[in-house]
Length: 491
Figure 1: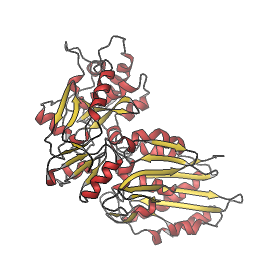
Figure 2: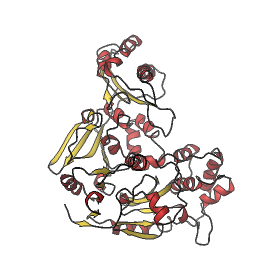
Figure 3: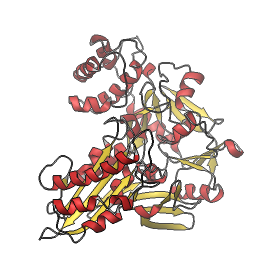
Figure 4: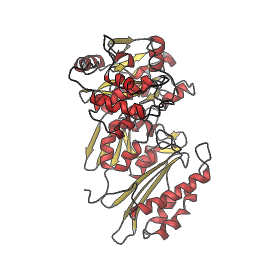
């Protein structure tokens, strides 16, 4: 292993924290409430759904200091090296004067029982820092991950609108007044050494480079790699699973990159949904609409596309959408790298084509082809912030005579892995793109999938919905546009 250090360092409000003894899966919420007595951060759900635990975490991105709202209940302290954690206690002035966001919540009666209020304040504060004049849609998006049982949300939205206008030049703001100083302090903290704390199964490791990560995995085959922890966090808070030893990859800058060429976009395994959103939604608008429905803003700020893939869940949202586009993944170990089609990465339930010494380094998403049709449909009980019952992605290309020249269809939630509907594809290719062809192809779904019944949906519902989504896709290509995007003359 490369040269190591033994201390996690970060800023907590205006105080520097240095921890050389730390349990690998201690959550930020527990640390704030139990170790620091910062009890404004609440525990509601302990699974990243309700937003009562929302705090901001600032980190250096492309040389600048960026702050994001996160769920402290599923964020591990070990992932916080060289970051700035901001809690609700930090917002008011030294004289007790409320921040404009807090004052607006008072003025517009945005709080009743008060339990969820600090989380709402922090989400709105994150929006206040990044958007001077947010639309109502932007406000609602920022609050997707915050639940309230009292106010009905309208007073909170009005408070957000009012806070956006309360921006006098001399307003006290703890972040804006110290941004450059904090950026320098975080840069000094980061260093190049791999951080290792604890011993044996209680070991926590934070590499700073892909090479250091490869070294760790070559020596610790049982290690759990943690990126955003939006799923892994629940393994701890709900299932009480031991993950040790744990490797946090949030500090590896080389895995935080998004690069684009005429051929497509390469996304590092540590890139969050939020950071990937702009590039992916420009290239494939359907992906942008899908990402907007993955969790709330806090989850999208933490969760990574690489983690969603590497986790191997059959109901992960991004794999079917990316499989339909022909995406590939690059896996890396100390001995070298290899690239394979994303659809081949998933072998069977709970098993992926990744050796114990390998990590998923990046995902490549191809650019659209001229004349192709592409759509993604997520089916869930709630429209927002819910896990899919099934998710279907469709991409076809048509010849000049209206014949289907290629078809790629992939579903999540229909099998033990994200899986292509190859029998349906075969029933379409070479046929005219007509209602008769589509109706005939619907029967082929039974050859591709034998879905399970669970609390999200029955097997019969899933199978019928998959068929209906093919019909919907067809109708949209014929002018009933809702989700579909047709690429015109894309090079």
